[in-house]
Length: 168
Image (cartoon, rainbow, N blue to C red; front, top):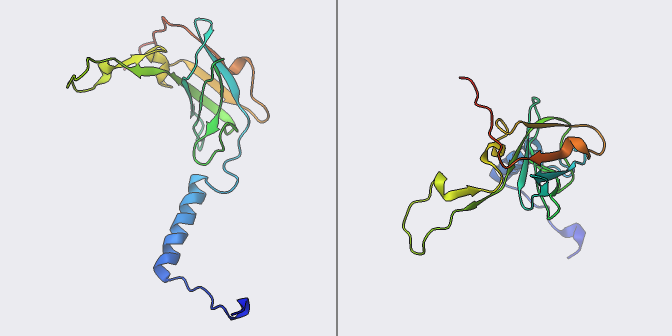
């Protein structure tokens, strides 16, 4: 049988519809072949002057249509951002203004065999809890076209940080 005699593949209508919705979902989510247009972002996280390893740095967009980004620090406290919705690892973030959150936590040790339900008191924040939310951290940055490194992406945290109480 030659290639010319192979019958064409017929795709059933329900399969075509499903494929169309999947393709549309990928396009809307930004998971196309190139992903979102991003700019390289590298920064550092310090707590009381020392690098913080294995903390999660979150960039929450302040501009309409922005895309969140995140990174994890290495042993030197250095992070590189990855945009959500199809961003390639450590490639960067979409240009715009961002509120920043920085989190490092671990579960509280419980006695072996403890049947106690887990709750908010079972988490130990290794970076003060106030930095864990973008709206209480007091941290912000702007990603611009080109390489984004330097003082604007150096976050010097304090272990005695207490976020300002918001007025109702």
